[in-house]
Image (cartoon, rainbow, N blue to C red; front, top):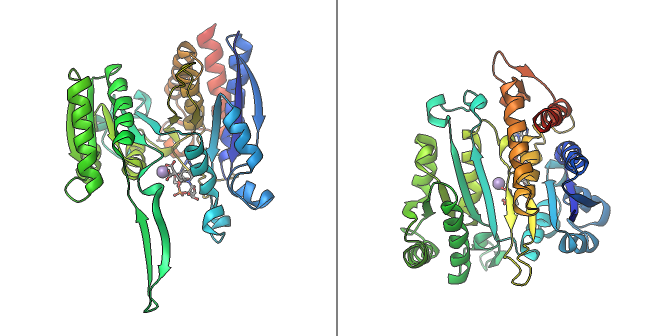
Length: 370
Ligand code: NAD
Ligand code: IPM
Ligand code: MN
């Protein structure tokens, strides 16, 4: 039986609350006897800043580089609004993404049948929804240089962020999107703003070429990113895989989250390039949502995005697709039973907290596996 090295980074706000629920699922997988895990835990984000004066320590970075998968909660919050930019909580997450080379961020948005009435959109718009946003995660305006605020001679300040992409960066994320499309609906929509941005022109050219040369069987369409945001709300089921740059992917995935009922439902996987020798890829799994400061500490956060992110780890890092499917079915079963954290509550269902939701998923796993 394989032993996998996990690094748990709960982070701030609701991060530790939802990580507690994932630990139960990790224990369940171990008990099932399909894999063993060695588990380390460390600080990231605001709590790391409080302890070490930086958003992630070198020790934690080392552990992340040595891990088979990092399971990440969320970082940030109003407490750290005033800390210097370079050591703000979010810098810990960005460093992990960059230093681990996690260029491909997979953000599936699935509307579970039982939640079709929890979305702010009409049932017929979201029912049966299953789309995948493939977000480029280590380039673009998040990391381009210069990135600075300078004071001009007249005393005014000027802020600069640089949107920057190279051919190879676009090629590799396009390939991830096309490969994944082949395992699903065989359709890719590439979202950019070629009408305004040079990086959008290059993005469009490269994705078009890769599609034509290597994936002629996959249907490719190009959509301007602003229109894509609108289309996601108008009729999201027209999409299968949406591929886009770092910033558009951040925004479009929050939009997609609401199609599923709540930001608390959306998991993600951030993957590096496969090692040529072993085929293994570095990976970090995290919910799409943040630290939810408005509900942190109240025991009401929805743990499903975090638990489903661990499900993605089972699938993409540990070759345990069967267990990942089981976990998805357990989540669906609990929702079918009518259990709801407050973010997905609708009349006639049963409101539960974070721990009760985690326990119910465990109980469903037991039932399904029996
Ligand atoms: P947020 O995602 O934390 O919260 C937005 C809204 O969604 C809030 O009303 C919150 O209560 C709700 N929500 C989010 N997750 C939920 C869950 N699991 N269950 C129930 N409700 C949930 O976004 P924000 O308020 O804009 O950001 C707060 C902090 O989190 C900021 O510091 C931001 O930088 C950080 N953030 C971190 C990550 C991350 O670590 N990956 C992602 C996004 C935001
Ligand atoms: C996300 C978050 C992060 C991002 C922040 C916290 C750096 O919003 O993962 O969606 O902007 O990528
Ligand atoms: Mn985001």
